[in-house]
Every structure is written in structure tokens, then in C-alpha cells.
Length: 308
Ligand code: Q46
Ligand code: ZN
Image 1 (cartoon, rainbow, N blue to C red):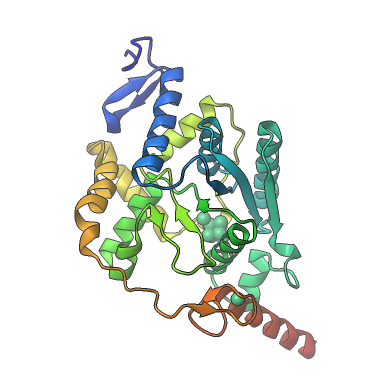
Image 2: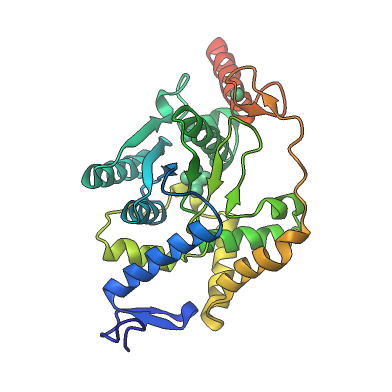
């Protein structure tokens, strides 16, 4: 098998693109694809400051590495979820990456926020699924860090597999408002929000894992322990089986949706977004979802303390 670009011996085969590449040409192909997504979707320019949300996994570190290589102005944000050994390992690997690349990293440990907001404790106190609390916290801290740091845009490492699984879930349940919002670029709906972008939306999990491996990026391989049993994984498994039989299906599913179907869904305007009385971030009610959750944790902790 020969490299499509230079005809040297190929080491990476991409069935979805009906192509194979040598190491150097694959890295070029990966970076060029990300750059094209950024430019075609008008995600950001080299004059803008980009905050990259990094988890220590292959996707977000491959994204950060690529943006640095392409000459974009980036800083990283790591949210410490307080999920035992998984969080310790992912923080260590993210910090090592930032040090090795000489780039700024902002670390926000949830256990140090309020009276302690580590995900397992919050989930137990409020009897919620850990991922529900985690999603609320991620949205809030990502938005707030982007605003406080004066960044123009927030980038996350969601890849093609994430986008395809999300799309399948939204289609199976005909979630029209979610379908309307499923785009690689989300423009701010309030002056305190920044633009949110997903530069890897056309890049598969296999490609980002291969990129991270070939670039020698030391990423956390283990999944978050709460990911097991998630519905998203069922969708990903289904899509992988489809991809195995029909290479390129995931890419066509997502890109054809964006090109042909997405314009048919009208997003309901986020009318009347005010500001949260407690934290000042945009909110539809008196308190934002984050502050409502924190208030509930406080109430339950006080109630428990009063009864003990
Ligand atoms: S980190 Fe958070 Fe995920 Fe872990 S607790 Fe769930 S949402 S699974 S991407
Ligand atoms: Zn709030």
C-alpha cells in the first residue's frame, strides 16, 4: 500500500477516505483538514484568542497540538472533575502537554469551588446522574472562563464520532430544537457568551487517536468511569458497525445533514436571556442552571448536617 500523497510506503489506512498515508503525509492531511474546517465554517482567525477546553484525552490534546502547529493563539482550560484516579491522571497529562509545548493552561478544580463541587459528591448529594451534573458544570465553567479571560472563542474536541452519535440520538427522538442547534459553530446568544466551535467535527476518533499516537502525545487512554452504559456509546457502536460495512457513512451522515437538512430546522431564538442573580452569567430564569444546582447541593448538605 502506497501513500496517496508521496507514494512512499503507507502506514495509515483511512477506509472512510479510500486513502492511505505515510506518517508525515497523514499528519499533514489531519492538520489540513482541521484548518479547512476552521476556515470554511468561519470558526476563528489567527488574530483571535482561542480557549481550548482540554480533558487530557486524545481528541482535545490532538486539537490543541494541531492549533499550535497551525499558528493559532491558544490557551488551555482544564476542569478538574474530582473523579478519582481518572481525574488525577488526566490532569497530570494535560499539565505535561502544556509544559512541553510552552502554552498557558488554566486549571479549575471543582473540589475547590464553593464548598466542594467534585462530580461524585454533587451527584450523591443531589441524587442525580453524574453526567447530568457534569454537563451543567462544564457549560458554566467553560463559558465563564472564556468570558473572564477575554477570549474570542471556545473550542472543544468533539469529533466526527461524537457528532454522528449525537445526530443519531436527535433523529431517533426527533429532537427538533437540538437538531436546529447541531452545528460546528454556535454564535453567542448573549454578550457574555463567546462563540463555540468544534474544529474536529469532520475528523474521526480513529484519526485523532492515530494523530496523537504519531505525534507522541501522552494522553489518558481510560474513559471516565461514568461513561460506561451511556446511550451515546450504544449509538457509537451502531455507527461503527455501519461504518465497517459502508466506509464513509459517518462522515456523509454528518456533513449531508449540515448541508442539506440543517437549513430546514429553525432554531427558536433564545428570547429574553437575562443574567443570573447569583453569578451574573446569562440565564433564562432568576438563577442559571449552575447556580440552581449549587443551591440544591448547599440545601441538601445543610439538611444532612442538621440531622446528624
Ligand atoms: S466526563 Fe462527565 Fe463525561 Fe464523565 S461524568 Fe459523564 S459527562 S462521562 S464526557
Ligand atoms: Zn448563576
